[in-house]
Length: 391
Image (cartoon, rainbow, N blue to C red; front, side, top):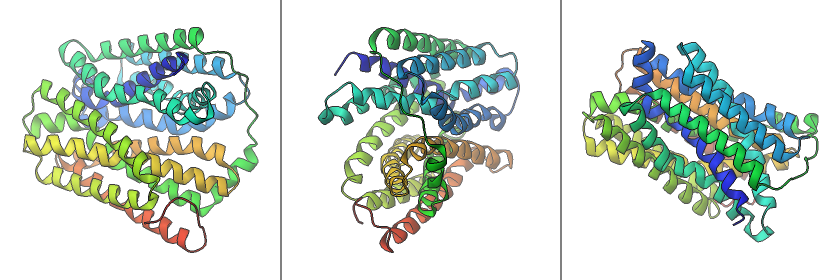
């Protein structure tokens, strides 16, 4: 693999860390700002909403800017946002920092994928893109547990200073290692927007929202839930985040491997299994063994839905003649689902249902996504035929 891909992987690592580390450090943030756990959960919700807005916006803006320059600018936005969060005197300013940080997310992965594919021979393009995304996997395997430990041992602010440092490293790595790549073509916005009036595309995007929302409903509040309900120590929560990261890695492999054989079959199995695991987690939340196994499995089944959903929305948007914006917006839809999940979990806790209530709330969201997948499958059998496998 070209050494330039390391620069992209570093950026992916930073993005993954800043997005998911909130789950492990929520109690420290809530304590410092003297707010409730559900209100502190806005640190996750605001980031996810920012990705939803920023992904299509910066994709349009960046279409006519040289890609290397755009990637450096995006890493700069990421760095500034994390610095604002690190020094924020109030919860509101910390949230502003999170929104600024999030604006780089979708465009960085979109442009980074194009650059990664351009650096290798056609037969190795998928491997090059996967190499870039390995940074995201490592962030969950290593970065999130380490960030959780830093927050518990020193300060949650230190975590964001470290992430800002990763942003600077990304800027330097891209500047030094990535070759100059010409700007792309301007996006024909009117044509691209046609995808968003296509019922098939909208149906699949509904799966995008509710599927990932299910496990994010639970994982956002995992630290207070596990400390108070299952009796985990602070170090035990960091261990759970390792299991979560392993689950994401396994799920990514499962989804990619089996979606090529049966796209809808993979969605049916993973969405149903995710919902059942979350119900088991809710029923057995006081058992540390049940908690550990559930965290791993909900991450695995939840993330296994990502690649088949992305493939499906790209196929259907291509059929509508407008794949570019749809692919970018779908990245935002995943994060809209994350925002929905964090919000739903916070609502159930604030309503007095207990810290374990995000688990059953997440199960409901997973079953909603399963229903949408079933309708999408039915519609594909009634004339909207795609070469995406059968169930």
